[in-house]
Amino acid sequence: MARWGDIAQWVGPTPNENSDGMQSVDGVVLHIQDGNQAGSIAWCKNPASQVSAHFFAPKIGQPQQLVDTGDRAWAEAGGNSHWLSIENEGWSGQDPTPDQIEACAHILAKAHAIYGVPLVATDDPNSRGLGWHGMGGDAWGGHPDCPGEPFKLARAHIIARAQQLLGIATPTPPPPARQAPPWPGRTFVYEGPDTEQISGADVLEWQARMKWRGWTISVDGRYGPQSASVCREFQADSTNHGWYLAQDSEVGPQTWLASWERPVSTP
Image 1 (cartoon, rainbow, N blue to C red):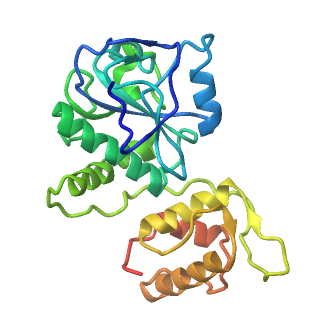
Image 2: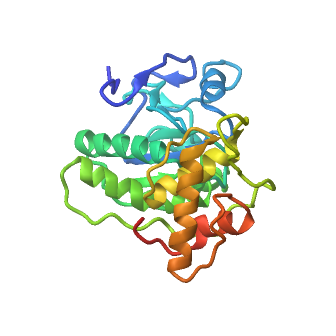
């Protein structure tokens, strides 16, 4: 069976698949779950859903595999017989986390080693490489916003990491330049060990962005002393590079914006 237990935890089977249904493996397709990992896998095991995918990449943690790579998952309609699918936890428009970049890179690297999938980005459903759900148009179910622009831009990072895993020397590209997501409307503040820490998906998104920029930070969704320290260091670094920020250890609207749109420098 084509279960990739060395890189993904097996969580199958599902009734929503066709045994030995892959005619070829032309590439890997990125999807977005528009939900969370556990709920998405449960839905793909429900016969009523009529959907499934080969792999699922959580925001934090290792990927999981639901369908054998020799079997046809029900992920992108007309592309099901020729493409392996990765459902990424989250919603369209969100950035991939470092763990999702790593998960997708491992899957792409193994697809290259086993099936010869080219380590290139593609927007053409009739070609080969690392694609995305919306590129197939109506024939693939008509999902133009799946997985969203951030994941499409992140393909350069996924490919570069896959090349590293395979021992192919290549420079790592900088984080893709993009417009910052909307400020969540609250300032992240750490007020000491005796005060409840601010937590949530918005904190997780900011931490993941800072880790992607090169800072050493735990992506745990809690704004604690480490996050506050990284914030202050980032604010100082920004000021030193001509993008002035108050050095207050707080993620307000200006620091949030800079975390995405300020040019990258080495921390």
